[in-house]
Length: 85
Image (cartoon, rainbow, N blue to C red):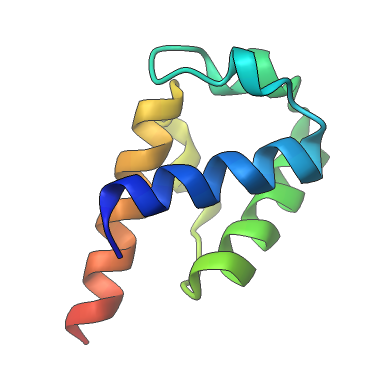
């Protein structure tokens, strides 16, 4: 899966599932603030990621995800790891 495809897929489900304004989804924007995430929303986000990309997410992985770019990089890395298996 290409990087651009990951970004487009990710943005589409963030807009749909979290009712995010697409104009606010920018690589350097803060994921938690833009999506207005609380602890239950993180669980929803984990489920959506697993369903869309087919890998298991460790909740502690989110500790290092601050921006949308961090999120894209995380998904991209995990997708590549999955493809290598």
